[in-house]
Length: 202
Image 1 (tube, one colour):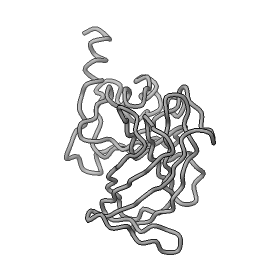
Image 2 (tube, helix red, strand yellow; image 1 turned 180 degrees about the vertical axis):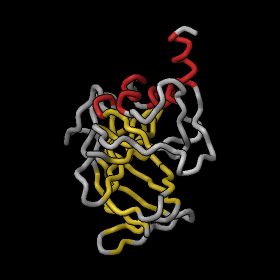
Image 3 (cartoon, one colour; image 1 turned 60 degrees about the vertical axis):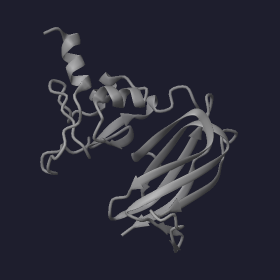
């Protein structure tokens, strides 16, 4: 079998479901980038395309992944190299600004704030309005006490076609979540400043 054919099989293999936590490999001990939780329809090809990242770089950043089988698991955390997240953009104060953020429960009710932390629902709906149309919106979570983005959990990337000023995202929040939610909007040229919200779920 040729290397190209073999790589193709690895790239298009869907994430395995119903694996126990004992089977799912741990994320790498160091991650010079962002941690991403694999979803049910993910393949290495889809992940690489989503983050505009070379698949070989993803494999290199994740030694726990087998380059032979390419097996990945739903709920598995992998490292996405940060160089490829914003390949041609800069985080600048002149970029798209976050004007408002609503954190809602399933009934559409605003979530309670206690001691500066928004108390998240098991499924929290996030609605963000920007100062100008955006084509990409990044949602990051950073555990309390950690340095921003070193590493952080990349919760979701929303791609908006055509660009829009508002976006809505549903977040299935794990228990014992406490830290900062960062929201970044990008247009075709630059990304604006990150909006930080303190969040918690007991």
